[in-house]
Length: 290
Image 1 (cartoon, rainbow, N blue to C red):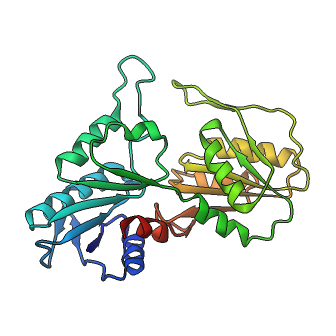
Image 2: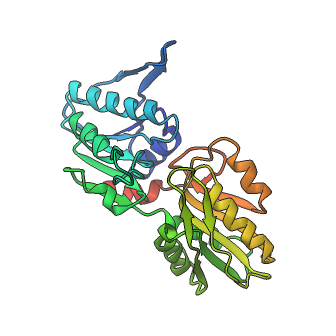
């Protein structure tokens, strides 16, 4: 097996290779002045099982194209089979037409992934299981919640409460709570306006006084939902507020606004490599690849 860390997943790709006991492949790449990507395989891979590791956070389109180039190159170089670890699989949130005329982007991405010769995909905490339906190749969805929970276990929390900021995060929050042995798990009711993007969260009375609140979600992008939940927890006198998520995109000033809302710490995984990604999903992914 050859593990090829892509431009967007150098740290995670190397960690997966270490977990599997193989040397990470030294892929070469650069960006041309016009923004196009260059990919080169400097060593033979003919007859090998090749695992590409390339997450697709922003710049999403560039990272996707680089993945497609990596797959095309592996095929041309004679790889026996090509699998892709795509920790953050972009465009999965548009898995149905919410309004007339909406393009269902997940269907296009699925066709493109298959068209470049990728035979199997491993992803992490895909936004919804329904979004996997268009894929006609095997696709495995790994949960990062047990790894996040084990990190949370090390924090000085005496009375933790797990909070899902919306119904979509319910199963993630419940898995964290179950792993930690925490009985208190609350799910907030969120409404997002599809046109304006305005987010409203219920303001029901919840007793959070003196509690260590852990807000659990799969993706933190603009941070609007997290900020709303954190502000609610702050108003109800939570002792501390942590955010635990798989994919910390943190667009624009999201990180600053989240911190200003009263959040003590943002804890994320290396599906998106940044300063908050302190939990690795490499062991979980490697266990699937073995």
